[in-house]
Image (cartoon, rainbow, N blue to C red; front, side, top):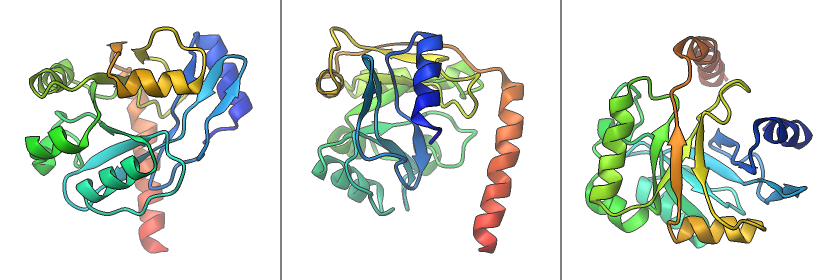
Length: 206
């Protein structure tokens, strides 16, 4: 995670009240960080061993990577919220549509579905994610999936009457959300995709 001071400055510049920096495998923070009415929410994205990626919000402990259902149960055990990211993007390897995530698992274990992801390069993928959420009666979030400062804020989840981090948690848990967003410029994806490949090669070599 970037230095919290930098993230709070960025939030102020972009008119945001909160960010959920989401690393893979381990959450960059295990507590909410608050400053001047703005919030950094602890979060992590896991590549499960069976059904693709899942995000945990409001984590207060590190979770080992296991199956989708086991990770979702671990997230709930630490009073976190389970978000299904970019579920209808077939161009990514670890998505629900590519991994065949059953509806019954979504219904039982997922709290919110990401209806807008700014790194979905085809708008139809987000529209199909919104159709999935409506069909399964799940509330939606929007995620910038920002790998650079330029992308942060391209997608937003709107909540009402937020004064504390507990308010954020309760509004998300109750599904009182509205979402807006637009795609990031595709050329911004290229350097970050190359960097991810380098990191993966380095990790495999280690």
